[in-house]
Length: 336
Image (cartoon, rainbow, N blue to C red; front, side, top):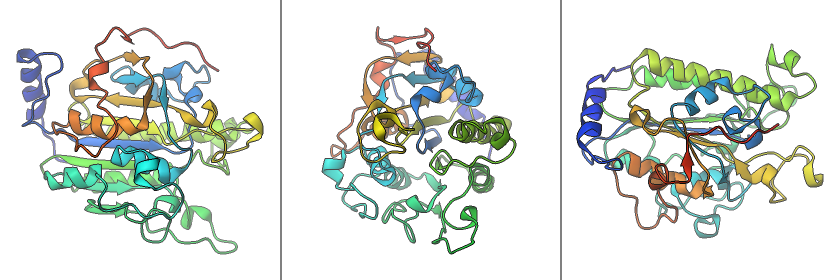
């Protein structure tokens, strides 16, 4: 990985001379988007859970900004990811079901950053987000590399060699790409599908969480995410990189008579974790209590990267919230 230590000194200088919310338009940090498929907010330690499933995310939360009341707009993977990456509502972008193409007229974060000179790579964990052989046509727009390559599962075939990829393999692919990225900013999207049903975490998580395999999938994903973050630190990329982590939607787990997701619109499937670590870990440890939506992610990423969001984006940048009276450094309320 290319090591760009001069960015740290440049950012430190900007922080010393600039006001709290100034974004220097000439500095464009690396951007990493991490989406956790089917992950409930109430499993996150940084949101109050006592289950101990997310030590790596909790550590990152101490260096970032946690939005405690973040909500998905639709409990479907492709539709929600469309909102995340375009900053538009499902009613506007019309990607409201599997296989609906992403219109070339929609603003799209990877495409916009690519136009500004970013190297762009996507590493997804499921056929659901495969633009060629899956249900996400058009999602590869603006990407130099879109690592999918899934295919329908035939009888007797391992689903981890056909329709899905475990988090550990997704991370390995992403790190392989990062090791070859030349100098200049990059945009990396990493998608983990493990918490989606059927819940089947690998050893030792399958044994440790035999009675709650959904929790085991989240614990396993957190450990894999930790491997990615540790590699960024090792190569001097973590501090100056903007990292945004969120779930596309949650999971009912039997609440309201729904076992999984996609039908009902309750907190179990709509309340999602949202965590943003800004370059140089600005506003570290903040918890924003204002209600926000995943539609706000794209304009926030662009603003934090030093760009103006296009007017077609319907969300709003969340940067202005992080230093208000509603953003606190206190611990979140206790959860389950």
